[in-house]
Image 1: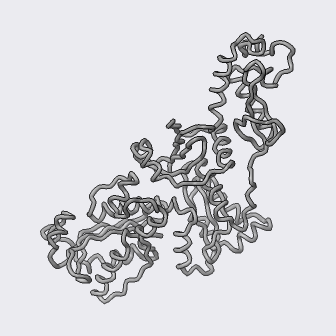
Image 2: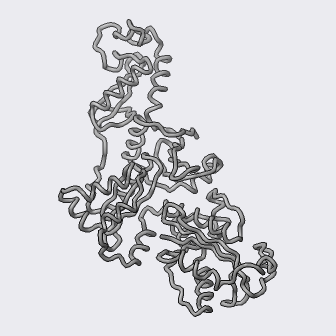
Image 3: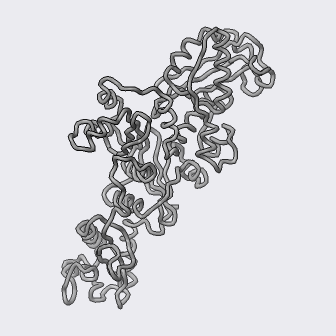
Length: 455
């Protein structure tokens, strides 16, 4: 649990500043579950340059509660949380100073989004909150006011969590916690999980990830792990002390995230990833008359060139070939689906335009065949696949450049996805391999995404 906060102060000498405004958003890693926003009467004057910067003046604070009146609420909302702030050292020092004046020792773990950004966004031109969120296309209002800056920090932290492929943030927080044995542990774990699409991580007592999975219903899938009787299941039941998760909003992002993180983390109870998830392909070639011919074959078959897309079996490859041939009135004889000596039977039925007997020109036929294949292959494509996000008003974006998967992220404003510079800033880069294209192409053959934007 996190407490994302921002504090505005009077300014002045070190350790003599007073709080003028505070905003805290209690964040469970997925959504805000509580918040506290308040002006605070610091019982001292605000420095003129601070008035000009924040717009908060002495008159506004005369009727505001004093710190001792809001202290209990701050303690309650930050209990059992890690404080997240941009330049956390400053905000945490100010809070501890105010509590010390009341005779109370306020202690919380902290994480700084400046330091996290320097690690996870190494190419940023500036790490000041305003310039950083602007470069990422994050909408901000009320800059230099506590709630405006806290909300900007929250959006930035969400993006950093998404970019943290090594899960170093979660691991750091978990190692700092005293976990111990929990009574009715598995039931508590399952109850805390959502019945939504995403990736889940099973951790041992040291916070290390021992298993990664994806599901369209995380709660149901983890419950299955805890009720199975297999050898691996029993080890997971014994060693799992916590399950964290990331909602993805849709299954394609979950599939890609699971694949990338299995490669990166190599959890000990996941099966070792195969170098290739596929074994067969759909290929294209041109015959002596210049007509495109499609055929299926096992990968690396002798003479197999012109790979279009990949499959896990010859049956799946054949099924797509039949589908393409039927949908686009392609010739069964050219595609090896008919052994007719003259024209194919589809020509007599009106389902073939006569390429088998050269009644249709190679140019016209090839144009139609190429267009049909384009729908099923990422080759040479530059596009963005958009789909539902993790919450209302948010969308996912999967970036394809030169036919290769480059990464994924989330956006909530159209200009973020339409501006390629901003899009590449908010995208979490993921190293492409033959399997990632296979995952995307297989998914698109079976399901639709919300929108495909051609670049």
